[in-house]
Length: 158
Image (tube, rainbow, N blue to C red; front, side, top):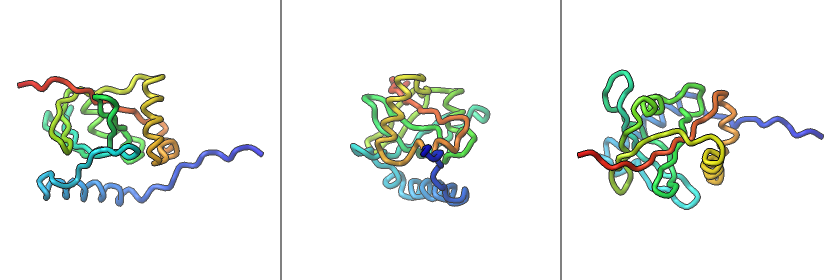
């Protein structure tokens, strides 16, 4: 008997996903940053606030993302709620890779890049897989693939 084709997990309607993002940002903003971010645990991702510069507007744009630590680096995914389009923050980071992240223990200057294909990508993707969120199943929803993003520390300017 052949294996059944892998089906991607069911996602909530897009308005639910977008509403959750809006509520999460509002909690962060209304609490003045005291709530809404948390550090990763051994088998669970944390949340950070990434601030990029808009590739067209030149204005600062912030988003809250899941991440985990890989040595001195932070690792996230450019998944856009598992929809086809690339997230705006990733397009901004490709145009201007130097940005900042806010974590529960402070702000860091970072340089963002896509994980190298091959060993680095596979190792970092496998770590996401270990966290049990069925990233392989959800990734089937994105025919263009999902970039694994490495945020490397850089000296802060100033």
